[in-house]
Structures are given as C-alpha cells and as structure tokens.
Image (cartoon, rainbow, N blue to C red; front, side, top):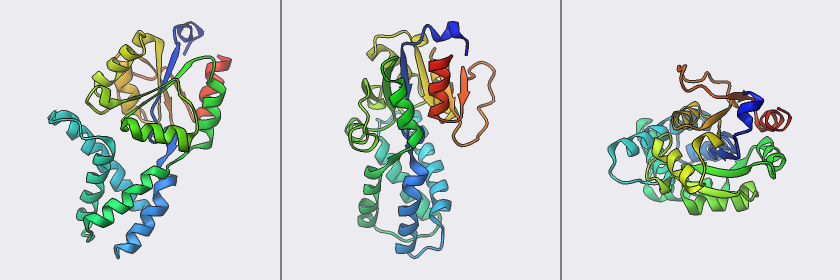
Amino acid sequence: MTNESLKTITTLTFDVFGTVLDLTGSLVPPTQKLMAELGSEMTGEDFWAQWRARQRIEQYQDSMMMLGHSGYLETCRRALAYCLRANDIQFNNRQIDRFMQVWQNLRPYEDSVRGLDRLQGKYRLVALSNGEPWFLKHLADNRIKFEFHRIISVEEAGYFKPHPSVYRTAARLLDSEPSEILMVAAHAFDIMGARASGYRGAYVNRYGLPYEDTTQYKPDMVVDDFDGLANALLDG
C-alpha cells in the first residue's frame, strides 16, 4: 500500500470474530468439556474445526435464501447441532442452550488490543461484524474493553458478510466514500467482499492461509497481526 493511497483513509472497519477475538483459544477448551459430557471421544479441537466451517455455511445459506436474517448466534447454534448430529453425538436442547453461553466469554488476541490502542486517535475505529448489536456491545465493553467510534452490525443490512449490502450500508452510516475505509479482517472472504464494494483492504493473516484466487480484489496490505497493522499504518 503506497503512502498516497493511505492519505484517503479516514476509517478502519474491523471484523470481530476471529480477527479481534480469539475464537479458537476461547472455544476449544469448553468444547472439549462438552465432548466429554456428551460421551464423545472427539477432541474439542477437531469438533471446533467442523463447527466453525459449518457456521460459515449456515451464514451463506441464510444470505442466499433471503428468508430473513437469522442472527449470528442462531447460526452458531444451528451449526453446533448439525455437527453433533453429523458425528452421531446424542444431545438435547437444554445442553445446547447451556453450552451456547460460552460465546459470552470470548477473549481478544493480545495484539489486537495493543493495535487498537495504538491506532486510536489517527483513524475512526469501527467494529463491522456479523454479530447482533447487543452481543457486540457486550463484547466491546466487557471482553475487548475498547470503545470503538461505532459498532455496526450486519443486522443494519439484513445479510451476513461478505454480501455487498453490508459494506455499502456501513459506508452510508459512516457518511464516507468506500475508498476512505480500510477493512481489516483475518478472513480473505471479508476482505474480498469489502474490496469488491470499493473499500481498501488489510488482510491480517493470523492463520497462515492463502488469499482468494483473484487478481481484481487483492488486499492493499497483508500483515501477520495488529502489531504489524499498526506499524504499517503509523510508520508508512
């Protein structure tokens, strides 16, 4: 990303789940306990990998079928139940309801908090997330413990990311041109969706995964974590 292109950026929008918050570190240990409670020999790590992948499918189906936005936690719950059934693990709804409370205790990556603190003051820092408004507020206030300039839920658009309505709605709510916004995410699909909607993109490659096979919607920068993000934006 060149110094010239940086000059147009006034706002950073941040994905939350998996980018700011450490889902794997937060959810694998309680998932391991759930497997033991339900009498399964699966490890929490193996089950979480299936659960996370299925959750994204639930979100994509939700957007494509256009039957009404279900909400992030509902798709998490559906994906959990699906993966339990797929692995022939017996459960009841009371067990699922009780277990879903673990989502209230998600922890942020240490570097994400450092990076947000460093970037505060130079840019508007906005959470742009698939989560429900009340859930995002809880996470920002009590888990991340950071005061974003604004928290925007995809409920404002009625679709999950990477639907273009999400990014266009956010730009409208922020009274900004898309080119003035840098989307920060650890998921390639989120950056690609934002770039296709006119945003700039910063791919935080926490997981060492390749970017999508596209020449048109590449990220403007690739960093390992929020320390690298802050270094690039503040020193670039």
